[in-house]
Image (cartoon, rainbow, N blue to C red; front, top):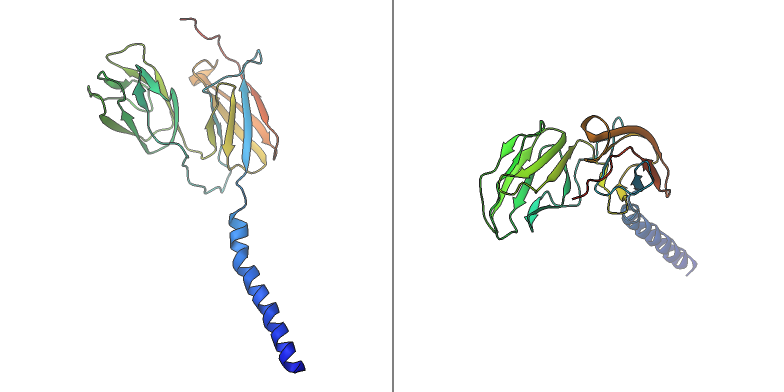
Length: 216
């Protein structure tokens, strides 16, 4: 009787250990990824929307460069949607026409010079972007249309919202070289470069020199 009770107790302990080991990978995979909250403002302290913030990839970092949004730049109401799109180098971007009129997309930018001939409503064209940098988009039919594609080689990039706020997914706490791009930034290529320190749970404020917005 005593031997049987001891064996039963041992089996119960063994079963608990097995259950813990099976659950451990689930607990590890459930850990949330690190997020670096950022705000971009100009020299007057005004938020800068549609700024692209890119952290340089640390040495030895093998994380693939991919983002949670679609590689798509639509045309709606005679405007590019979104106005600024971040994609990984080598990405193919779709250009769906969501308007009732035809469009002809082009770019003269150094990273990608191309032209897409006229295409109509509910049609889509694509183009592959193999070089990093900024591509300025226009439409041959509608001169007022302007859009931007920022091609990056780091997975740690994000676009700020109207309040200058952005969340960069994945970077571990530490020091990083950072590049901020915006069409109104003062500097070569509309870029600002600096060095930041990412701290867990703390929003980083980046001040950049920018030209005043044009009044239409």
